Length: 125
Image (cartoon, rainbow, N blue to C red; front, side):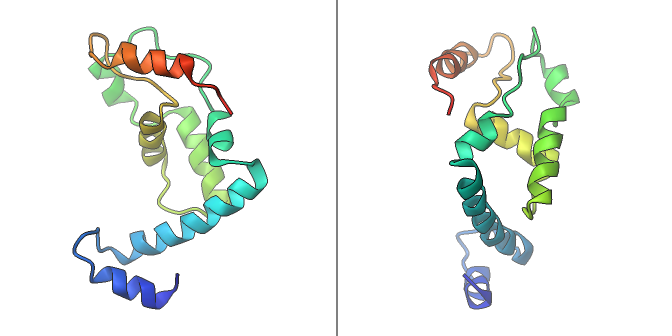
C-alpha cells in the first residue's frame, strides 16, 4: 500500500480517518511480516513475554493503577526498536489483555474463571 491508498482510506467513513494511524497500520503490517520471518509467528513472539505470575487479587484499584506493566513497557520498547509505531505501553497492555496473555478480570467477574480456564488449556507456541 502506498500514498494513493492512504488518500483513499482517509475518505472511508467506516474507519478512523487519521493519516498517522492509517500509515502506522500499514507500517506495522510490514513490521509484523518481518517479525513472523524472524520469530516463526507473532504468537511465538508475544507469548514468550507471558508474565510468570499475576497479582493474587485483581481489584479495580489495581487495574486503575496499572494501565501498563514492566512487560508491556519492554514489549513496546522492543517493537519501537523494530520500527513499529503507535505501540505505547498502555496500547501493548490492552493487546496483552485482548489476546489472553494476561487475565486481569477482577475478582468476582463472571469471565475471570472462564478466561483462566482457557489460558490453562492454551498450548503456548
